[in-house]
Length: 417
Ligand SMILES: CC(=O)N[C@H]1[C@@H](OP(=O)(O)OP(=O)(O)OC[C@H]2O[C@@H](n3ccc(=O)[nH]c3=O)[C@H](O)[C@@H]2O)O[C@H](CO)[C@@H](O)[C@@H]1O
Ligand SMILES: C=C(OP(=O)(O)O)C(=O)O
Image (tube, rainbow, N blue to C red; front, side, top):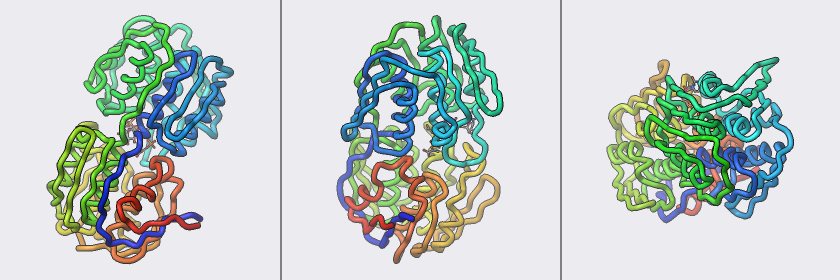
């Protein structure tokens, strides 16, 4: 079984360009379906989730190529409107192909999506939004058969600002004649990035980044060339590793505006941070200290995807920090593994109390989900002694060479079989 072997305790130093954002690249790849012809997506990270998205596109008849971090999708000729259960279960974002397929083909057959196991992850809001636009969705034996020949614009209200439901609704609305307003929309930067690509295709979409997104749909779209924004969660991972291990790192390619809540928390924990356009410089003496409660919230609040990673950084520091996970019901899978490295963390329901122990020690640990596994790597980089992290398949879903990036910053990390 392949694993990362980390000899921890070295400060991190150096400069790194952050990968393109997984959570932008995936809906943007789904959006390439909307226009016949070849779209070209730059800064598209090499991830197993991206491979799954490309496999879905191929299965629908698209011609797909990749050169480095540039991907081409030719959606001129489509064949079939079904996604296999196997591909649907590979990742959560398989579900955003539904909106794109309804917009382009007027029909879709698929099953429920997979993705990280963080407690229940229903898709009721996705389906309700599409039904509001007139989609007919029937479920038989776990297969969703959807037709959208009578879809038109409409007023959608999302009671929770779901990222995926907002994206699905935006994609479907592009194919619906008339005006669609999505109220209660998610405001994450990835929604703005999707809007950027849709506009490049000629779609009339406004309001992404606010609580209301408005789409004037039904226009014929054209393929486009687009550059995916930098990955704010990958950036946060490198920053937390440097914060905990100490050192000075310069990250380029990620927008510090997207990381305000994380940068503020790292500063309160003792790091010094300077930012410029697409640049973040973090200096740390290592050994972070406790911060006021870390409460995960929709953007611009503290991101749930950084909860485990920041917890790992604080676990080897000093003082008590409370975490409250507000987005997902069960996102503390990493805690038992951090405890094996000496962490003192008590979990009660959605709250975790982390008491810094003044340094973790290496151990053999196993990641059970994407960010939980990345958190163990962060802990290992700062810990005394040797850490072996298994569960790399989770990490490959979202990180384009996490070991390579950390090695470039001076960490002693190698992948072994
Ligand atoms: C590929 C992608 O972009 N993944 C991100 C996306 O996931 P994803 O789009 O799955 O997350 P959502 O924003 O939809 O989920 C937020 C909350 O809404 C609930 N909900 C969601 C949909 C629905 O139909 N019904 C419902 O109840 C979820 O259970 C969760 O409690 O946003 C999450 C929250 O920022 C991030 O952790 C994920 O990294
Ligand atoms: C939870 C995540 O991804 P997904 O929604 O794709 O499972 C994540 O990126 O942390």
